[in-house]
Image 1 (spheres, helix red, strand yellow):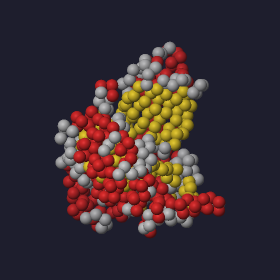
Image 2 (cartoon, helix red, strand yellow):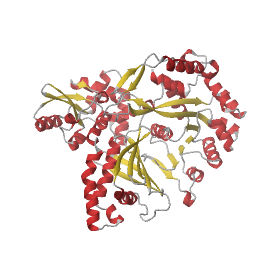
Image 3 (cartoon, one colour):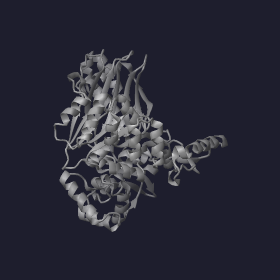
Image 4 (cartoon, helix red, strand yellow):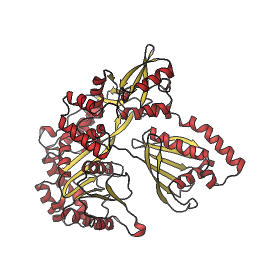
Length: 559
């Protein structure tokens, strides 16, 4: 992250009083052992946040800290510096002060970067420090107009293919088509998209991105490009180019100088032409921490205690797209130490994790979750992750693994935490085995956050406020929420919305955060499980034991 020495960094951080020398030395030892950046190690351990480190180093360097999330960047300022230089030096021009440029930097000690900007622009620079994540997000300004980027490439592609009569396979290997796909993916990464959709309509070829959980139309391309572009995706994913009647799945890696993104591909034979969906999975040295996922203090402590048990099972539940797999990968990363053997069976493998043995499910050769788990048990594992419990056989194997001294992590499709217990019993798991092996259930959803750059206060009508209050009253009943004051929902006194800006693409939302429901298996909950109690009774008991419902967690995050 920075060009300062570890001794200088230690001096700056310990002087702040936020971290002691022992924690710093432990983090430094781990960073050296695993060949990683010490700042990333400190953040992952939850010792300190990226923003706080930036603020401390701002004092150390004698410069100001700036959060770019709160700044509306102007193209005319940002593009004073070529994109390649901004990426390599991790710098952004975010404004002006009289005749000087305000320069946000991840490393304000990089004198070479400051000299370059001053010589390139002919203006003096006022350096500010910001976080690496702020820089990465702000670089998206360079990719604002996908339409203008495509105009020339598309014209070249259409003219060349007509002139030379190229077949689809040849076009897929041709430079214009390569440039089109690269531009789509680069733009999607810059816009923080999780998925890219390439789909044919009756007379249109539509590109759509899923951003913060919402699908958005991005651009329409000439229908003549569709066959070559799909073929290009197939070539990269090592799929059959001439197979257009059956679904195909694959993956490839998209690499630039500063990003490595794993792309999972699904292709189906739709009515008007093949439909392609590409899931973007950023390959980063740093995983999110539990705090960054959105866990509150009490829930955080419960999860930390549960995953430190040497055996038992921890479940993450919720619908598709609720962040279950991300939560499990975060837990895996916390547990990933040299002294443990971690193995996973997944469908598909979403992230490549160092020092973790990952197996891809392959039904074509008979490799199912249950079969893979059975084989992994002979590999001397300490921790096992099963991508999803889908059937009785997998559930029984997971329970057996937890009973025989292993910590098992897995996911399940239920609407809430309490519903996981009867769901597993319905699958055929014996209640007494479930009660003795299950450590914790994490239910979750992902919700959009209001864009911090364009947030404004808003007033609701009396009728809307009455509806909200009635909902709150229903949630505040003792049998639903619990009788402890700390577990009561308070009516927010102020409300906000995003009015829409360039940074959020006019949506008013930017980024997502998790809302959680954490259910530890207490003695009373275990008894209810053995008795095959319905989800409602389990939820009521959990609430008495201070479990916060997801809707409570959501309201708390509003405050």
